[in-house]
Each structure stands twice: as structure tokens, then as C-alpha cells.
Length: 289
Image (cartoon, rainbow, N blue to C red; front, top):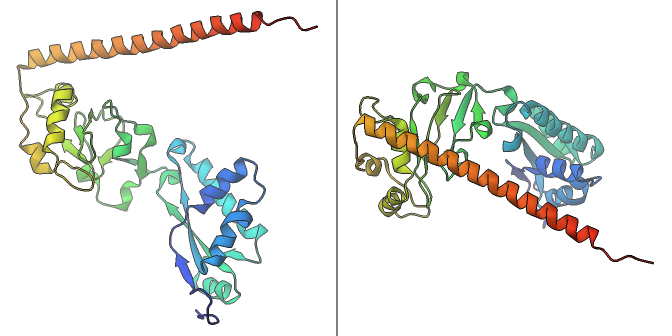
């Protein structure tokens, strides 16, 4: 690549820029040409001659809507290349890359980030999929293809307990086995022995405030506190009989159900009171002559 005249910015290759999503979001909000107004001037000012554009599926579109969303992102890239054909071009070969750069245009390379649009058959559970309340959001999990690596030996089993290892909180959740999944870094996998401890009892114990305080105290100091595998292995857990464990599990389920009903009742009460106050306010308006 030519260096350009003295004082000109060095030619740059940007390997990752989520501008496609930015352009798509802005166009959905009614902006006629966000790429020409915002992104293109920045690329030119930075001396970018090669821009890699990831086709990324946002969490809210993972699932049945992943392919549809990916097509919209791809259409956005094609729209950019068509409207700004004098400044950019999508390239697929090294020859096309050289020709586009030699013409003074910016070469755009499209690349998929994640396999959600392809319908990956293995979910990768991450910290973001584990709520502070100890629930797993399987619908938003990243998906990969089982043929892309030797993942089978890492598959989670029904009853595995996932414990968040990084951060200021360390919630736990039980894997139900509803999907084929593996756990990413940041989650410890605890596989209880069914003849010794029930997974739901271990879940209850780990999510107790006293236990959480002990876990926080035992976390190793770093930029982000973390629980090492050795720390978890040395962590003591009281083990009553399986009969007592089952009673604790039953009471905990009733407590959660009671809390869900109380939350629902509170929402209905607030909605009812708001409706009464609204009717009183609009019906008591002074007459205007």
C-alpha cells in the first residue's frame, strides 16, 4: 500500500468496528444516511483503507429472529456499498482488496461474529446469562456449532450447578438440561453427587446471604475479584440428610412462589390506584367557556 504524500495519515486496517449496527439503529430511528454523516468522515480522517465489519446478533434477537436480524445487517452493508460506491466497496478476494485500495476507496470485509444466524446447536453460557437471583437466561445465550470444535466432553449435565467466579457477586444457578450447553470462562461448574447432595439444596445454600458474604471474603483481589477453582474446592458446605435437604428445597420453592405472588399483587394494586387517581384527575377538570 502506498504511504501517501507527506503529512497524510498512514493507511490503517481496522479489524473490528460495529458501525453496521450503529447505521442500522440510526436508520431505524429515521436518519436518512448515518454512514455518510458520521462514519465515513471518521474513517477518512483516520486513514482507514480496510474496514472489517462484523455481522453481530444482539442478545434480544438470539433465537428464531437471529437469521432475520443478520439479513437486515447484511442489507445495511449492501446499502452502504451502493449509496457510497465512490468511497467504499465490499471485497471478497485479495485481488478485489488491492484494486479497491488502489482506487482510493475503502475496502469493506464482512465477517460473521458468532453463529447465532446459522442456528448453532450448542449454547455457551456466560456470566451475562446468570441473573443475581440465580436464574439462567437460556434464550439469550451465544450459540456455536458442535462441529466447530471438540465440545462434547464439556457439555453440561442436568443438575450441574454454575457459580459465578468473577465480580463482586457470586450467584449460582442449576442447569436444567433443557438445551445442549457448555460454560464459558467466569463460571465454575459444580457437579453434585446425587447420593450426597441435591442440586437445588446446594443452589439454596450458595445463594444465601451468609454464604455470599463468605464467598466475597474469599475472593482473590484483582482488577475484578475472582474465586479460584481451589477456593471453591476448599469451601465447606453443611450436608444434612437427603430428607432434610428435600424439606429445605420444598420450603424454598414455596417462598419463591409466595414472593412471585406478592410482586404480582403489588403491581396490580399500584395499577388499580393509578387508574383511580387518573380518573379523578381527568374528571375534575374545570369547565372552560
